[in-house]
Amino acid sequence: MSKQVNMSARPKVTPSPDTWVESRQVPEVKSTTKPKRLTIDLDPQLHKALKLSCVKREIQIADLLRGLIEEDVKQAKELP
Image 1 (cartoon, helix red, strand yellow):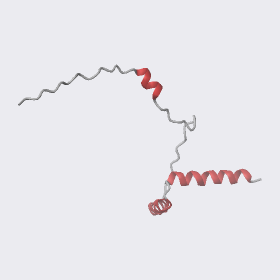
Image 2 (cartoon, rainbow, N blue to C red):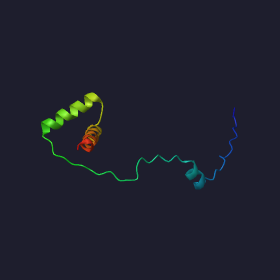
Image 3 (spheres, rainbow, N blue to C red):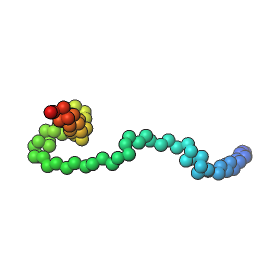
């Protein structure tokens, strides 16, 4: 008892680089300026407390600091 199965070859698809480039999704660019890096030294206990505070709030340290700096700059502009 033998069973024959006829299998055809895969269809040949010629990939087109132009199609790929045109169909890709480009992420939105927020800003064309490169952000500046800020480095500060903290006491290890203060850093640990800051980290725990951010974990409880479910935010990143960098986001917290950016917000505080933006608020300070905004208040400084309002000074006489």
